[in-house]
Amino acid sequence: MFDRSQPQFEEVNTYFHIDRSQRYLQSLGYTGARRIVGYAIPVDPHAANGTDNSFFVTDTPGTGALFFGDGGTDDAEDPDIMLHEFGHAIQESIAPGAFGGSSSSESRALGEGFGDYWSFSSTYEQTIVSGRDPFCIGDWDARCWLDDASQACGYPSGADCLRRVDGTKTMANFIVSDTPGTEHKNGEIWSSALREIFMKVGKRTADTLVLEGTFGAPIGPTFTLMAQKLLAADGALNGGANSGVICSAMTARGILSSVDCTSAPRGELTFFQSPEHGVTGTNIASTIAITDSRAIQNLNVNVAVAGDAQITLIGPDGTRAKLQSLDSFRGRSAAGMWTLSVISTAPVTLTSWSLVIVSAGDRQPVCGRCRSSRLRR
Figure 1 (cartoon, rainbow, N blue to C red):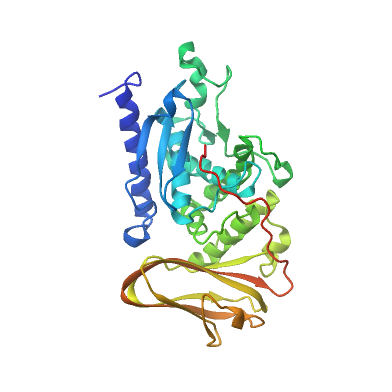
Figure 2 (tube, rainbow, N blue to C red):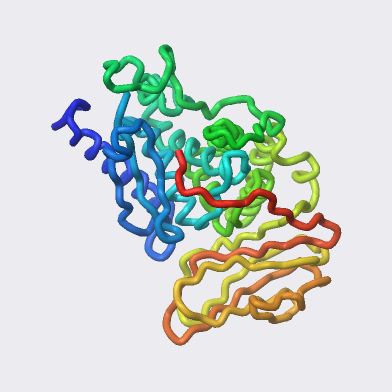
């Protein structure tokens, strides 16, 4: 009923694309207690006082609102821009506060790279049918130089893509600079790796692995750590059937080394993610199977529980410990079945949980310039 000269066009367009993305998430099984972005997300399709910029702003941890700016091509006209920002809402819902940081941080680049990947994945099938370039992100927004000069477009003549997800950048091209926008350039390394995985294993498999690999992410994750979590997610969901594809994409970009993919996981932190999410009850026992037999140097548990409960970690040999004191596991083998016991007087929901292990001989984790940022493009 509207064309792009009318403000209602952006309102309808925003609703359509965000709603469709949420429906797709639910089709993957993220419903009920497992729902991602489990709230009615506020959206302003004519925000930023006429500034041609868009962003996701966190509110309480895990939630936030979307703002799409006008000017040039209004951002809410371009699905890629909207879905990129909704990607930030997805990550914040799964791992609150994890993907902030300075413009030079790997965590911020990971957030921007995921946003571009989510745009690419969400529109790939429709773009292929149209004959347009599926790897070009923001191809409508970037062409705003064709609009009337009064629209104050910020892109140069001839611009065609905001960014691409098929670039050849590696970690050797990672830019260490706090100049605003650096995070988007560095994010192209991650989005390209995820795009390669998508093209080889298919949309639903790739999307599920990327989403599952985000659960339990700590504040300020690195590229290597998130690649390891992607492998762990594939191990939990598919028995490692896609590990070769993941390793190929990650080693080609210097995110993982060949050693990371041919031997037991090593590094600062090794994540083991439970495949169980959204379990509700008063006596929950959720498990993680680990085959790595190395001795434990340090162990931590990431748990998301909705409600008050007594939580106990039980090791493969029967050792039990509250989460506040896990030193009793030091020196023991990590191999076997680990159980998280959640006991409560009223029903609670175990949203997700993971083990974070530093094995004996591995380097201790270091977090350098970890800080949060509220505005993300």
